[in-house]
Image (tube, rainbow, N blue to C red):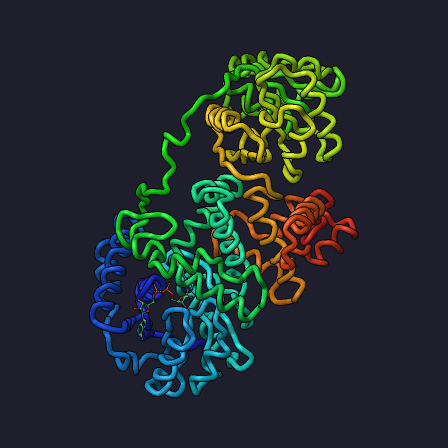
Length: 592
Ligand SMILES: NC(=O)c1ccc[n+]([C@@H]2O[C@H](COP(=O)([O-])OP(=O)(O)OC[C@H]3O[C@@H](n4cnc5c(N)ncnc54)[C@H](O)[C@@H]3O)[C@@H](O)[C@H]2O)c1
């Protein structure tokens, strides 16, 4: 019989504690919430009241249910008021000395069989437990932010946590409607271990002026379908919490990628710690608000203004998936589009692929038949590059091999009229190497579309040291005309999305290799805990393990960060021919 937790204490009513108190009370548990002083009690109360009111406004809770919920929460600044609780969860700042001090006092106050739960996200639960006098009854209870909404929990056991304590807390998590995963005490557990390196890298990108905060965030939202970008997420988590978490993970892992980016430290020192104070990477309407308001870093229309080149005709070189997708994008947006392949037959086949894709849209009722015919009439197939002579923009999407692309760019230089914009859709090669193959590097730019191009909103617009700002403005405008979301970034391996995504996927493989957690648990932690569209192994199998390995190798060879070395398990699977869905087996087996 699992213990029945009818009364639970929550110490610390900040971002997490207030949410934990709410979720407990919502599920019928009596809650005693404790803060450090009366002012903090008032703040905690206001947070809970506002959050439950939002739930009522959003029809997630009725007004009488809210009243009931609030009557189940008693707040105090006196720690001894939790003395008769069977479980007390600490949600204090991520500082060892603060947590140990309170946990020790709780040990003295509570009945001998009461359980101590810690919300520590990077500190060692084992280290916290030894100071308490009851290490067997200490357990990590990692709720995710916002606690009332996120349906996932990591339950962290140490080598001495008693099995019945784990069982009881798992049963409680289920009663609260959460999906719990039990894991051992390791830096960052599952989700934060994978998440924090990614967040830290995003801060480094901003710090090195690689891309703007808006573009970094938009890249992950529109390129990967994440619910929010990394910098907005840091504002939600709290920069102080993330800083302490990274610092602790670095102390424990020694991985330089966990060493907090200096900018993070500076922002914490300046008090810019995120939504809870109304300012972090972004500025908010008020402390606790999620509404972003303009500030000095908001891009102005003025910065985007300036001359642009006229573009009415577009050429696309290539006949594969990306090329035909890009042809569809431009033709749909009203541009006369020439698709150039190596032979007339191949060019005709490329146009036929576009037609097939449009036919699918017609059969699904998303496109009218006459609109399809108009779009197709704008597409001209050509078996010779000479047909590109009068195009205002040429986008190449041919084989991902530098020598092949350089030969093409040298030829485009010969063929295209002066002032034509020449774009490559490479996902891993340096754009500047394509530019250098021409006598007009200022006209060369990267337009990294995502697959499938007609559907995916994001385009990474990659500028080299030579790209003419007029060319950049022209391409940004064109992307908007074609209803894409453009982000600008520098010419570095992985641009924004792949540089942020693949090291995280590689970390997940290393975690699996270390036997810390299973494929299913890691996928659940990231999908359910972090609301990502899919877990890392599902995604790796979709992308293809060979493609993923190649991207990781490119990143590693450019940046040489030891933590980015491709995981041996990934290499072995590729060697074995287990490439993911396309071969029926990758990390998972798709044969049945
Ligand atoms: N913020 C997140 O997204 C997130 C997610 C998962 C886990 N966590 C973890 O949850 C814990 C709490 O994080 P948070 O974001 O809620 O921090 P927070 O800064 O928002 O809240 C901490 C609260 O503890 C209170 N406090 C400090 N000393 C106290 C004392 N002696 N007695 C009672 N209250 C005291 C503070 O007044 C504050 O309200 C940390 O361990 C953090 O790592 C945070």
